[in-house]
Image (tube, rainbow, N blue to C red; front, top):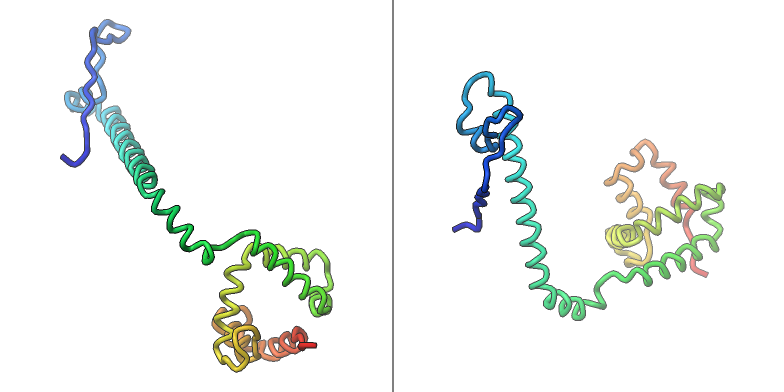
Length: 188
């Protein structure tokens, strides 16, 4: 009724142990051996059966999801076409990161704040890995005061970001101001 099935294995001959006594299946052992001397083995058999059931159910769910994906694939492809201009394109991100990094390096600000080339590479790697999230975060916080729009970040917006994320504590307000002043890039 609920999609479950029962598998019954029938044997043409009964398996015997080393003494010629019929071997009990796990189910038969669980059902028929209730003495204390068999308790440990019975619990082991019960656990094996539980594991089998869990594995079976997990595999059944996985297969059902795969079947559903195949059924939905044509719809997903149509959605991909419709939303193509809104989906993230890794080539565009890579190009944008390169342009942004070029502007950052060309300004000379990074060399002043972080003179170590190894640390600069770590910053670039971080930027590459997290560009979309950093971009969204920048847009959000640059709109906090919205005096300059979402393409600039004013001191109050930087301060709000650092305060809400607890990157620097309030006791570092002079350091925050210094970072802002040192990293400010004026338009030509």
